[in-house]
Image (cartoon, rainbow over all chains, first blue to last red; front, side, top):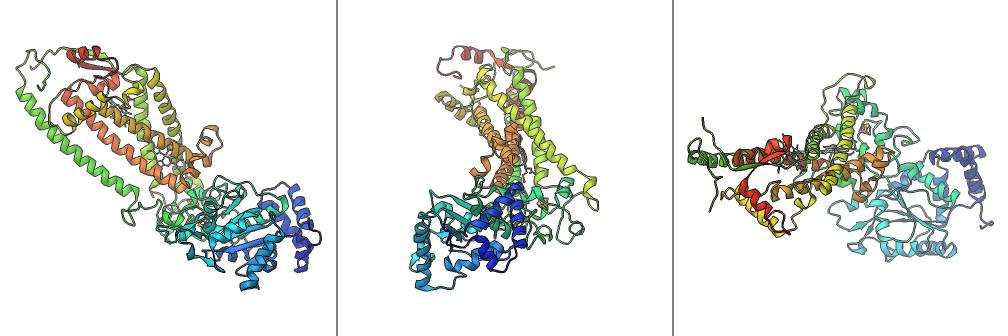
Length: 370
Length: 239
Ligand code: HEM
Ligand code: HEM
Ligand code: SF4
Ligand code: SF4
């Protein structure tokens, strides 16, 4: 450990945050991460003694909403540390340096902390033609591969870096790929959402710092602490779902009563995120609480699973509003027509057979063709 | 009175377990299609009441899940019976690996689908085309169980559903699984439409008592068909 470097807490203190606020923050983080109460002590100890993580934060094909979310965390301590001080390292949006100096800054981090620094990525990486996203004369792919080589781990912020988001939506003109498709052999944490919830982002950073290893991930690389349950499973409108009370159109009686938004196309039943628990903007609300269905922003391919206000996606190639049910009914009618036609032909044949049958009482062979 | 005597014999084609399987399956599929359709398109017949007073949608889902378990185990049982049951229920009937099975498929298409000839079909159990369709249906059963239990895994800690937890990441997300599950429902509906029609059709045309064969287990088969069946070559059970 580099003792010359100030610890995380020392940097926080410098930023004018009291010990009390710092402890409050540690407690909140322990709760968010689902730790036992002893975990609070572990977090305090880690942040008290360890220096902040060396971070290189790249922006590729993205809208910066992840950064925006991060700096609006309800407990902005992590964000302010990672982002305020990051100008020492590398963060394209916030750093003071530019041009040559900027490039030097991130190379310095790579040289100084090999195997220790964390690469954080906002945005997807174009692969159709790498030239779609170039910084300082290098393509996003080159930059990422170079930086990831000696990184301790890669954090993929948001849907872009985790699954490609809107850039990867059909027809994906730039061949946008998420981090895990272009980097291998490194632990990658997919912090899903468009953007991810600020406190979730902070929680991931605190976890990395406290435990020196990546958090437990689900099969899609998302931290289990935040993405193991569906929005639907923690939704306060769930009782209305089970009761079969649904909003039929925005501003109807059901909407006013806070019924379930399932029929308005709510993707809560297919979306893993913590919106129902942590909520947004310092726990003020989240989309469903504000009367809008979940659009499934923390799931891969959510743009292509539209329209947003329809329960199931339309089927590609059949027009915008064509669901499986419409096609099914069409096929059902076609089948019924086919069956009816077949039945008519059968009866014509059968009639011939009966009229040709020998007289009653005689023995016959089953009709056979030569 | 018109009546006639035909050189026929009764053959025990469907043993009791196959018949039980069939009707349990038919009931399950019907219940699963109705409840599944409701899950995808819930009726809005309630308004102006409070959630704590009602649970109808929860009940619909509950019926779907209970029936799903029954459907699943019944299906597993049928696969087992495909290895121990009588010759008409064995697995090799369903997978056309032999030339004579393909020949029969073409014949059935000519005789029963296009109705361009009147040739007699020699099969005693399922004919080869029907068997092939049942095989495809079994694959749909399997996919429906995979996608269904894949979704169910997210809301259960039980051993069986957890075995299917890989399905969702494999298909990329719950939405994709749900969509596929919903599309497959239409496979069941279309199959059932055609299947029931064809059972009636065969009974009407062949008068071998195929409908009641799934109830009583016996079919009327012409003597000459049985003779040919008994003298068939070893490598081709359905010649
Ligand atoms: C004949 C077989 C089946 C049919 C026709 C069927 C049909 C359906 C349909 C149409 C849906 C609604 C999908 C949507 O639009 O959201 C559904 C949902 C579902 N089905 Fe099935 N299903 C079948 C078997 C199964 C099986 C074997 C399982 C295994 C447990 C299963 C589990 C589920 C689950 C978990 C849901 C989602 C319910 C929810 O979360 O509200 N299904 N099914
Ligand atoms: C009124 C409704 C129904 C009747 C009268 C009926 C009758 C029959 C009959 C007579 C057979 C044997 C036909 C043959 O030899 O090819 C059969 C087989 C079969 N039926 Fe049905 N069926 C009905 C509904 C259904 C439904 C709803 C399903 C489910 C999707 C279904 C699935 C099957 C399957 C899988 C077989 C193959 C049986 C085996 O060997 O395991 N049936 N059915
Ligand atoms: S509003 Fe959405 S997430 Fe909430 S219970 Fe209804 S379907 Fe589920
Ligand atoms: S409610 Fe759904 S769409 Fe909205 S932020 Fe949460 S996960 Fe994203």
